[in-house]
Amino acid sequence: MFLIDVAGFTIWGQRNRVAPSPVFITEDGFTGWDDTPDMRRSSIDRPNAHGEFDAVGYLTARTASFSGHVVTGSPQETAALGQRMRGLLSDGSLGRVTVQRDDHSEWADGRLASSTKFTVHGSDPTVADWQMQFWFPDPRKYGAMNHETSSSGSLVTRHFGNTRASTRFVVSGDAERWRITGPGSRSVLVTQRLYPGHPHVYDMATGQLVIEGVVQYGGVEVADSWTVPAGRQLNHTLSATGSATAEAFTYDTYV
Image (cartoon, rainbow, N blue to C red):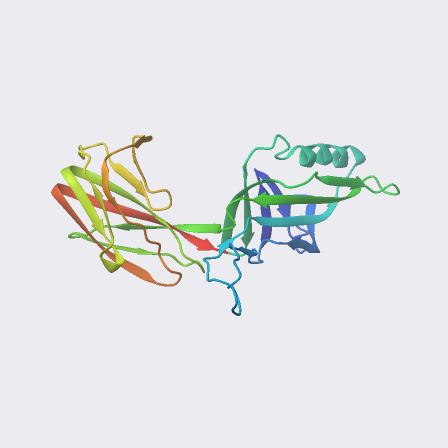
């Protein structure tokens, strides 16, 4: 099975002719989704020497293009599909694009990168060609969520993607302060009071502490950061002045 979902609109792979949707992708109409985006970095020449100074590289935004055919039972159905496809994310909003191939699914949030093309064949108004291009500000793609729970103060994080992933920790209990220690003795120390029924959410991607949807300021004393490498697991310890348990949520993350 091969399908693409764009903000709730389903597009099928060419081989799924038995699918209920009349919108299909052509064999060469799926580009950019599987490619690793380009790298960007500050480039400074070494004076009177070969090469450049070393600098960390970062992935640029991802651009993906999808194109294919529409085959319907009537000109009216073709026209209606054209209206629907031209309107997808046309307000400039951020929408979710999900690509499913057999039992593997990946998703990313993006916006339209250019105008949607929908051209009806003059000789047969039940057939049309279409093209959509998307811009993904976060070049990474995400898959299944991995959920782990602490046991006796120990907590493991893992994921099954192909690049480093960030974890979201949820700490519950009754404690004056709590600390999660990760690789290389790096840690997150939260000194804001943890009350029963009001869990703390700490996201390693943003470095923010959130309680009941509200970002907290001044309650984090130590805010080291780390990510989960692809194909590995990391061991953590949870300690608290009081009682606390932790959960870890890590998406499979891909480039």
